[in-house]
Image (cartoon, rainbow, N blue to C red; front, side, top):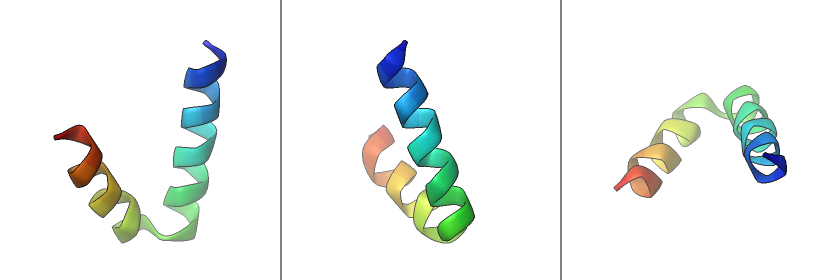
Length: 31
């Protein structure tokens, strides 16, 4: 659960920082 919370927090930061880059990151890491 701790890892999941950290991931969610990091994802939130990424979204606020640069949304297009988050989409790019997701496209690379979901595969």
